Image 1 (cartoon, rainbow, N blue to C red):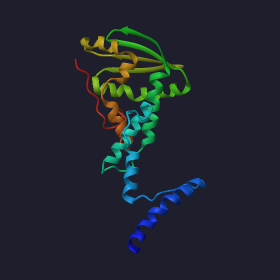
Image 2: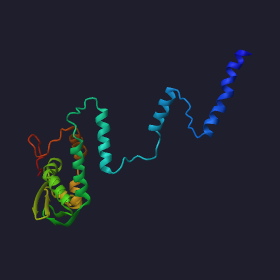
Image 3: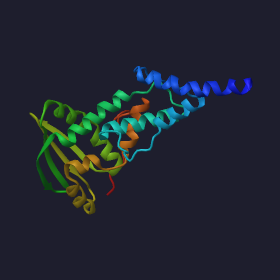
Image 4: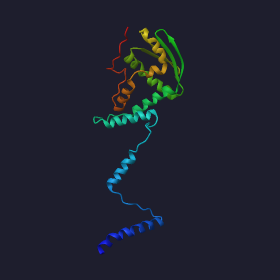
Length: 211
C-alpha cells in the first residue's frame, strides 16, 4: 500500500498545483523532451505555405543566388559580391520601368530608338546598361547597336546585315532588344560569385556579323 501511494500521490497533487498556479495568474510551463522541442522548431520553420515568391523580383533573384552559393561547396566567400548583383538589378528595374521611349522608327536594316530616363537614377541606369549591352548584343546576335546621347536623350541604332532579321529587330523594340538572349542569368551568377567580366573587356569575343 505504501508503494502504491508513492505513485498515486504525485498524480493526485499535480492537477491541484496546476489549477492553483493558473488561478494565481502564474504561467505554467510543462517540460518538453529535447527531441520533441527540436522537432517542434523544425516543423515551425519548415511549415508548408502556398506562397512561393520571396518578395519582388530583385529580392527573389538575390535569394536564388544566395541558395546556390550556399549549396555549392566550392563557393569562395571572399569573392562573393551580392552588392554588385543588387546594384545591377536596380539598374534593370530603372531602365525597364522608369524610362520614356520617345520614338521607335524603322530605318534601313533595323530600327532607331530614342529613350530617356524619367529621373536622375534612371538616367544613370541607362548609362550603365547601355555601356555594356552593344557588345553583348553583338556576341549573341551579330547585330550592331550604336549608342549616342544628346542631353538626356539616348539614341539607339540597331541594325543587321541579314534582311530576314530586320523585322525581328523592329518588333523587339527598346525593351526586347535589352531583354533578348540568355546572358542575364549567367551575368547575375558571375556578379554574385565575383567573376563578372564586361563583354567589352579583354578576352571577350564578339560574334562576327554574318553576310
